[in-house]
Length: 63
Image (cartoon, rainbow, N blue to C red; front, side):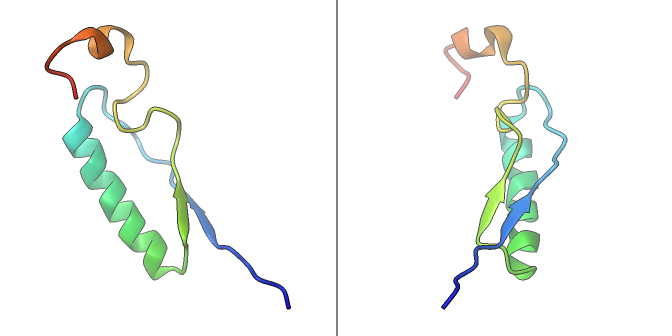
């Protein structure tokens, strides 16, 4: 018996520093991917914070 795994690739446009907005877009993409049968969703690296993060990670109020 062969098992399969459906993987969705999400080419989302991250907005630098807008973690909440990026999460909202990811949740929407995940719902669509799940509806289409995907069990896993893959995003670009550093999608949540936007890329590049540079000095954002040094701010106390970031994440």
